[in-house]
Length: 148
Image 1 (cartoon, one colour):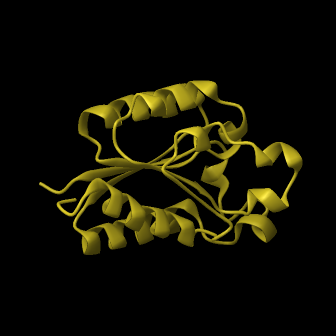
Image 2: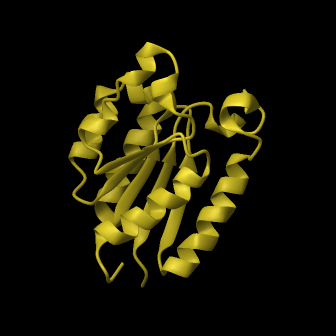
Image 3: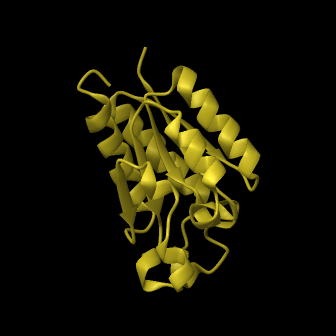
């Protein structure tokens, strides 16, 4: 059975393609999910693609990944800068974690420059648009091992 990679998305990403397209682009989250599923087939892994506007739900999914996940790709969105709880949950996960941001957070408001999630992440991809998800998925497979 192929290894499972969780792709977790935080608040407002359900509006991707509609909200601030000059920053986040015109692709929707469904487009990103489709592209990741296609790449996952090529890489020989499965993905579980999830989005929530609720911090507790994201934490529950991280806990679930402890049981059956080989890695986590996470775009925590605004929780990046505020959630010690998500950091704590990620610290309880043994597999690789890649943090993704569609925009280059370092070219934006100063409060976006700090990430709690980065304290746990094995890599951070920012400013590559939605392609960052595919880059992260490739990296997770590499970090999870050749048998992923």
